[in-house]
Image (tube, rainbow, N blue to C red; front, top):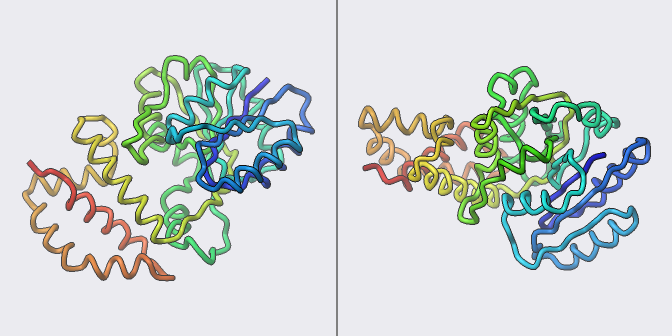
Amino acid sequence: MISILVPVYNWNIRDLAEELNRQISELETEIEVIFYDDFSSNKSLVECNQSIINQFGFTYYISDENKGIAGALNFLFTLAKYDWLIYLDADVFPVKEDFLKTYLQLTKNKKEVFCGGLLYQDKEPSEGILRWKYGRKYEVQATEEANENPYLNFKTCNFLIHKSVLQKNKFKSDKKLYGGIDTLFGLSLKNIDVNVLFIENRVYHLGLESNKCFLNKTNLAIESMIRLYENQDNITENTRLVEFYLKLKKYKLVYLFRILFKKIRPFMYRNLISNNPSINIFQIYKLDLLLSKMNHK
């Protein structure tokens, strides 16, 4: 018996719902599927999703407020009636036809959390090229590589967990934070000695926002990272960006880099909103954001 929990925000869930229904029909076990709409702004899409869910007998819960991703994940936990939980993002699609069966075979060890990993489709998208390039280079990892540092590599978009783990270790819910939920939760599992194991059970990540939208989200994520750093949260000790910043600070190079980045900032932005953005420039752009917003005392 297992509960599949899916937070939704402004996304059409038809393809995912249909595939889950197909795979469930081939299994001889009780499975519930709960979609949680986190107060989507597109109300016509909400109605469309409700009609889709009604076809399959799944649950579609609509929130009367936006709880944010951590709040949504925690609330989904309270709705689940079974002990084993599969969390999926709404904008993913299982790569394997036996995706659910693979997870079901692992429901034995309560002290392990299993991450299935993700992929990006090979075909270059017409929109969202920056998000696609970044995801393929930095988010897609070989299973062996991911298991070298599973807590830091943890992804909430596709994982299996026992309810008892979440009962004592909730997702850190702070609506002022954007991003960092994956790493925060992964490191919290390390702190309570819960093993995280990456397996080959991937999903395609399909939700590719425009370059400008992705840059805006990156800006919010950097602000969240700074807030965590200022609160002395241990997530920052494990991020390459902050590690590099601390090296610059140690050798008193922060001011020099800020001046340099300020001069090339317009060039970087033009490149990143173009049809051929550079991932290397994007990494420099993130460092520029961090240096420009950080309190360097």
